[in-house]
Image 1 (cartoon, rainbow, N blue to C red):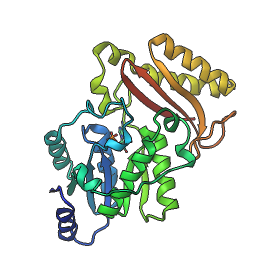
Image 2: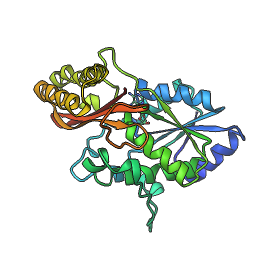
Image 3: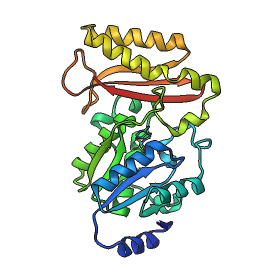
Length: 275
Ligand code: AMP
């Protein structure tokens, strides 16, 4: 595996890997089995697999967890190597945001509600850094997790709207045996919070079952929120939405999705399922 840390090294690496199509897996490191599944999907999509590791400061809000976001570059590179990754792109902040940097992507549409409201500026930072990564690595495809459903839709929309020529591929959420979606932030949960955390996925399944029984969505989501609050979560939202536009739905239709964000102590957990 080639590890590139500067744009010059990245250019050289791209040349030495030849003209094969490249599939990119953008990450913020602290890699787990979910990321490895993205790499395996990338391998199906292209002859060369690249992964980026960059904890992007501009997608964290003031007071959010940028400083305490888990970082373990040596372990990450070992995992990438073992997974058969061809190229690791590990830029620093000065490479991503050079002096005089003055351009950003301002995503609308699917970026506006939910995470967009709860984390102002988050999708602007995320979309900007993904656009930069696409420009640097020039992949043919990029693989993102459905775990961050709204992020996946924002990236799809951006790639289409800006004609970036990157095929954006989504991969179903990889979960623990108890249903908890794998996330780098799970390692910040206390043992007690870790025991409570699977209730988020379980509640989404319960709400989906209630919808299947014909329950009205507003009512079913309110019951789900109450169940989560009783379990000890602080709830940011639990909603039935159109999977592509992220608009709220008042009835189940094709492509509908349940999305939720809830806090356990200071750890914010996201999950979503198809309905
Ligand atoms: P991050 O974990 O924030 O660095 O995200 C890097 C990529 O991994 C994103 O595309 C995430 O959606 C994806 N990802 C994170 N957790 C999971 C998971 N449990 N299953 C599938 N993809 C995931």
